[in-house]
Amino acid sequence: MASLLGEDGRGYELAKKLENCGVWRSWLGEAGYPSFVPFLSSPSAWDSFMSSSGNGQERKSKAQLHLQLRARALLFDKAAVSLFLRSFPSPQCSRLSPA
Image (cartoon, rainbow, N blue to C red; front, side):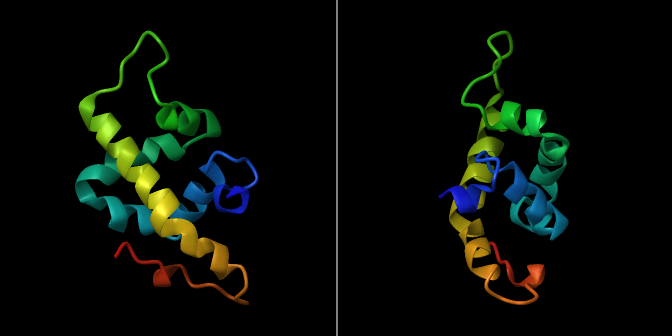
């Protein structure tokens, strides 16, 4: 599981790699992607996004919780293929599919 989550163990590194490949936009669609991309700006923004609750003062909106759950599902279920890409000499990001 650690290799799926990256060296940071939080999924931020893998999420950034997927962003560099352009898969988040296709997975989340034009409606969800603009709300999601700011959380990739830093590890602390990612941690805040992926935390199960707000910071105590701020509660997450229903839309943000839905986006978080969707990102978690995509990151852990569909991005597992990244484990196998390491064995290929030149992995192509275009082969990652949300289906």
